Length: 346
Image 1 (cartoon, rainbow, N blue to C red):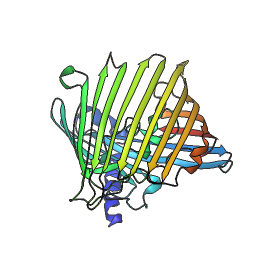
Image 2 (tube, one colour):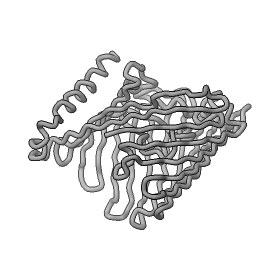
Image 3 (cartoon, rainbow, N blue to C red):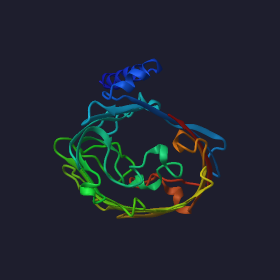
Image 4 (cartoon, rainbow, N blue to C red):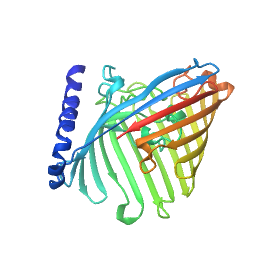
């Protein structure tokens, strides 16, 4: 069954890449639809730390996808993680190698319908593309935020030129967010409902968002989560902050972070991020802190995500050594370490 599910996206992706050949570029320009845009990127990293094996190298992501529009209302997106093509599904989604498989339909201005598998609308950090992260990795926010889900979502942006946007989705109860406090429910009986409100103002200098999620579990306590995030951008400085909380039964996980980024000479960014994850349960209380200091170098300044280097040094608190020992307390850096990441994409 797993092989069958993977054959379709791989075949569709192969066809799209073949169709978008240089020899057909002029013909594609003459026809507006269908629109086919292949994309992809590779991230390669190295780690060295007190408890980390020195000179540990790995591929973080090797992703390939295709997106575009079928007509002026219908769009699509398919993205594969080539490192996980043979990894089975977690929860009630597809195999892990298939990340996104979605169709969108623009019903009217301010109302779009999305169906398929995609990121659930929860958390400012988690809904940032992995290719655009300011520091290496999503960090502790994923101790609360949910992973991709299969479902449907209604969305809108800048509704009535107000700067207000929204997402509201209904998904299978089981998702692949095993790092969270969430114990999965049964599809068809238990649903995951997730939504958020967004605001962009002051000529996009200020961004605010907040959201909530509720996932029922037959015979158990529901998972309930909420968050609020802020981004303030005044060139060349940007500030980000977010607070997240997830609860299920007696277990509660709270994550917060603050980040300061400064652009230097267009090609470089200096960034500092502090984050904390706190777990409380009947017999357990744990707190972990990470302080990340980094520099990002855009090797192709006009499109930084096309080619860039990131160098981070992470200072971990003593409590961070316990990360990974409890449900809802897994993501973060356990020990002081240097991490270098090289990214190339198209």
